[in-house]
Length: 489
Image (cartoon, rainbow, N blue to C red; front, top):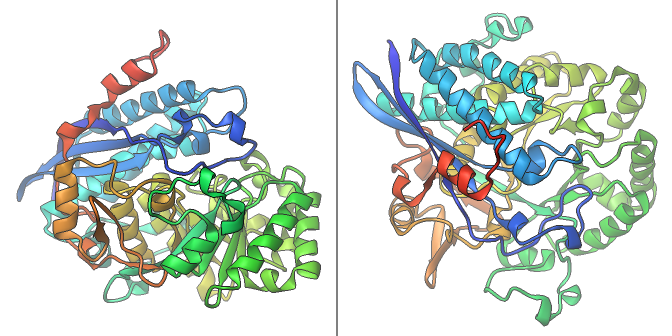
């Protein structure tokens, strides 16, 4: 069946400043402004038609340039302009070749073009993947809606044209449907991120420093109020500081029922010897916590992660705790390269690409069948409602990952970023996911988990068309808030 893209429109939803401060990398409290706590959400509206008719598809993601591009000397405004330019390029590429027989074939045509454009303009691979993923998911949402099927069924019935062997030859004729359950996973435990600036105990957050908006503010309160038992702890690259903070956190998470822990270095350990020192010290001096760690994420900067000279020490550390790549996973072959060095896992994030995650899932299945350790995790710090959060949960239902990093509800106040129309739709159609408290609605967390059965609707987890009129066209937004004579658009 032939599909044709009729139009693509780009929007931004500005959000209120986050309720809590989050530090990334070398940032300190004094270097993070109120503007840094605003998380604009980029959105795509794509109209696609086939013989069944015509419909919209959408996608959305936080324009998280602080994470996509951490290169020094490049201010946030510059990175935003460059990201917007690349999103416009991706839009133009899809419109220039609007007809396709299957979403996977269209992605195979478009993704390399967008990645190449990013390389030529000096962008990080993650930035290029982000632009590509926005178009990819909007296309998938529209195709699923045209076929009146949820994304899980389209994958299960192989109606997206997905052939992993076309990208990774070792996968041969593998059919992903063989590894999927009859029904998607619809309940997920939340892995609460403990950021470098996040208050831990109630004692260390005096009342005058509190937000006092009725929501938990400390790690201690999240464990008590939401029943959280999965934790993702950020580490800074300073062995002594990281060890001391982990020791304090361990004392608190003991209150949780069978705590599960992951560590995330966010590229902070430029020296592998220092990272190994931390691992050894945790094993010897903080054994209880060490035994509860599932894996450690992205210790090295992305530029040195795939350096084969690190193989010996990476493999040595991996024998003690599995290592995972995240920021280094910018290309479709990054996970395969990382495995050759000694990393066992990689992260799923919708912003890195849906088909990319399916390909990595297929690689995990392939290696697991050969009794090799391989895994896929779910990471995404500030995934916000509606479109980004719902589409990511829908993807997790396919990948079968039962716990995921989720902290949008911690750093942001409920559905405060949405229009009244979007809020009404969410409450009406997703009562399993949200609960009303006073004048606002919030993610419904029961015993540390969220149920998402309502996402199994025609489309890619999106039941209602977003309120586009409440958003700002992307071109208008970037020109008004981040003007530049050098901006192409």
